[in-house]
Length: 464
Ligand code: UDX
Image 1 (tube, rainbow, N blue to C red):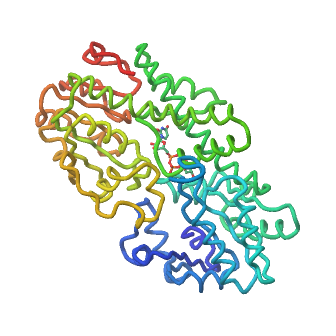
Image 2 (image 1 turned 180 degrees about the horizontal axis):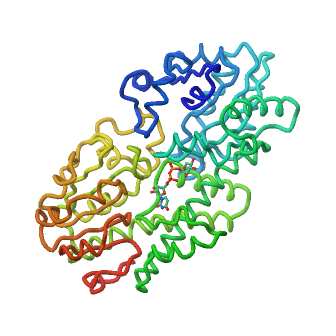
Image 3 (image 1 turned 120 degrees about the vertical axis):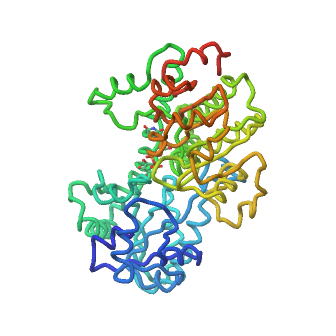
């Protein structure tokens, strides 16, 4: 919305939320999320044509176009628990829009939702419409965190789905005109509603599948002595495959990939397509396998026990340049190590102690539900300390796990790091950021995903 405000000075954009602390933060000097470049954009427009408010009903009533970006968590109970999207928040937003509207509106589905949500929302709106016309559009967002502003300034494509009726087409054109302020028209794709909704799920499923494919290869590389970076490079030069998104890692995280695939799986099952459902389920299974495999490597390398040993965890966010920890692989890896009674010292340049404590206490899928449904003040775990400096995390540690590819982890003074650790000193690089040969020369025992194994690890029991 901030980018729309920046690129369309004549359009007034009001971002509304019922959570006052969040709106206050958006109106302050400390925005509630860390995203490179976002501060600049907000500062340029705030108070001019970009506003943040808790007066939801007033601003919805006044708007011509309403973007709905409420959370759509995975259901934790009832029908479809652990798979289907919980549309409670979407439904109440739609009912509120119907209640407060006095003029015709275009309602844009911005949250990622299961296919055919638009139809359900359309029904709520039309059944409560009091003579007002609502036209529903699907406009899924493809930005990635950490590069959101660059992605929005120069999107590969903008997707707008709508009904193939005259009203639907008119609404599509109205939204297209907003994006056309800065996006070349040939990059604005217009489709029917279902195609737009499914395209978002499909894009995320394909992207996640690429990572699970390369991660599956990484296990085979470790078993055979091939180097996954070399394999990725070789296959990426095939123009049909392409070089991007082929980095083996400890696993993918983020708010979208797992949730969207679970949705896709559920939709397939509901449509009587179990083979297709199982195909996509496997992408998540490989991701879980990769995290378990990493934990097993750590434990087996350290004489099959990490009990009482200090392990420094460098990076907790699900990727670099964000403070977001939703579905980060670090949660499962840390829980796995804690299960083996390790003592963890965690450092991430952007994630707070409070967030890490909550994440380690939270149940699966709770993260996307409102804060009042999550554990209030989780008791801190004595085995976990969160520190604000990489060297402090590392001091006296037996091993280091790199779980986010923050640039600063590439440039640590590894000689200094080695000197202040217990020996033998281990580095487990879950993001392939360190120079393995240099670290081995210093004296470290290094495990790097999908790379030829250190002779130390080769002699350890095989990991499943
Ligand atoms: C993703 C999609 O890219 C975006 O289009 C969609 O709108 C939302 O979901 P995001 O979750 O912000 O965006 O991050 P992304 O860059 O896609 O990374 C997702 C995860 O995959 C991260 O944990 C990342 O570390 C991991 N990843 C990515 C890899 O492990 N290897 C890669 O080669 C690329």
